[in-house]
Image (cartoon, rainbow, N blue to C red; front, side, top):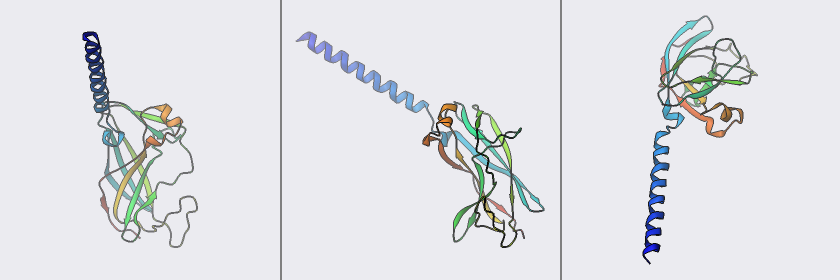
Length: 178
């Protein structure tokens, strides 16, 4: 009887230890949504719209992998700008690209990336068949949104659905344009 009781106590100790270890591991891992911070730093008017400067900072303790376009400079593929519309809600206004990301950029803890995103007014009645945009004129509230980020490169290569993060910045006010 004493050996059975000793065995139960030992097994119970193992279960408690494993539970503690698993819960500690889970608390050390921060979801990517909480690990990344995105901000619209500034915007500059251009003849056709605006250039929006956006920063992404890794506030976590692990690297994050973000898909990038194949340009020489680091251009984040899943980073876009949305504008508020009273009837439609948040609507995509740029950038427009038909190039799929093939690689990622690693954003280490405490590192920050800057991207400048051009957004433009559409000529009245002009259709953009590539991007299917509903907003013609820029102005009012805009926000930046990062739609994908991954814990590692393999997760990106398999297009793991966990990579869908939809991290948004605080809105900023653009002046109306024509």
